[in-house]
Length: 575
Image (cartoon, rainbow, N blue to C red; front, top):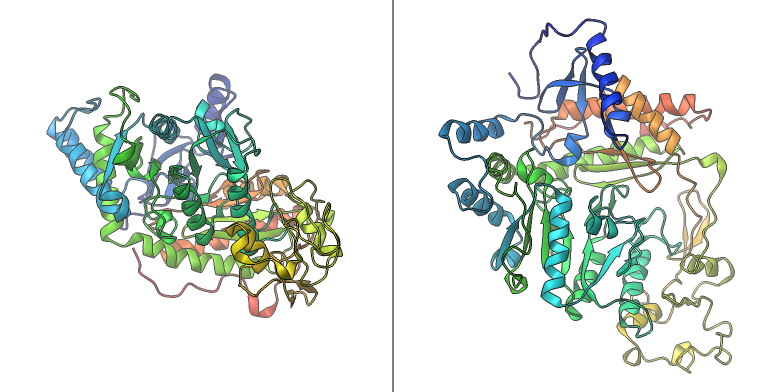
């Protein structure tokens, strides 16, 4: 029997009409905290699960694309995980040992180090933390502050690092002294109004300019923390080139780079660790969720040069969870030996391609994006029109409306935006730049690398301007300037997203919501998803989307003949 299938089950306590389920849900609502989240949107009572299939107390079965918020890389109750747990239990080994050495812990550390980026693994140290990603983030922040003697922190808009005080302060939307928030490259809703590679370059240059500005107001940073793919922020992959720029910027200024791989790790994005796509070797990696094989476990791995904190600087009673270490060892080895990260890359591309074809005729799906088996669909309200973007960052886009092709702009923390060669810069004569020379007279070796990027453009085509470029045709046939401001995205549609989630549940599919306004449908299936299950997920999601769109009062456009939804999947590596 395949591990993703469940045999028939009979529970004497369960009535056919779901009365037991409703009773359990009522008691939960009466006794549990108002802070509960998933239980509100997913009113189910799981009683058994295997692989991707979850069975509720009422007998209904679901395909689980939540996977414990990404903690179940192999799905529910995978045989190798169960065997590892049973082996520890049958051995009568201690289950909780604080930070004492054990054979189980030694095996886990060996397997973990075998998967790390080689540039880090060769000289790495590991700190076992309290069994949650947020505690590992706290440990990482404490580590770099002690190591550098600095208190500031660089974090990014849209980030999510946990719910404890320090981790929450580093997350997007929080206000905290000592945390400098930088713009994350969000292509669909680019904070600079340009998107693409140019938007990512502007984000990097903003960070570099701000750090080097003696009047920038940035507290001396002890570290920079980022997610290679923002998960709760809306499934937003960081471009590889941008990640490399962050590595260069931090290394040049002796700022430790912290990669939060709590959700992206263990093959989820199509590489064992999401930083592997870019070749970046961070100074610190924060790991949790899947590394415990579905059981609570969290660690911080870091360069040994940072290991100067004193004994007891970070501790936790349950940092010696032996069952989680055994389950984690089995999971890490299975993913590595069976090349599941490569499988995730192949299946993820297939899912993205079909979802994008499906979205082509439905303006309510603003963007389909993701990496590997970390996929998001941002839902929007196109009938209300775009949101006007305002503020010093969005001013970069305004210049495209009035500027000409080839006009240049400088954008930074104290942004001054406008054509340089064709109009006067504030405080500079005629066509002069802020450096006192005309645009054509500025030598690139006389400006900073960031300013040089403004003048040359990403393609290195001379002084055509960082936001300037040639004219290109948009998919709709409308001409626009390459690399310059574009029409703002329509507003998010959280009510539609919630409706889609409920329609999915009715069809036996569990999905999560995320994003700035909770308007992104998130898919986090296990890495063991089969081709048959992939097709079923896409079919159910398509039906749910159309049902929710239909009842929302808007009509979706019909798919063109060449973009029929979800052709049968091609033959692949079946597991």
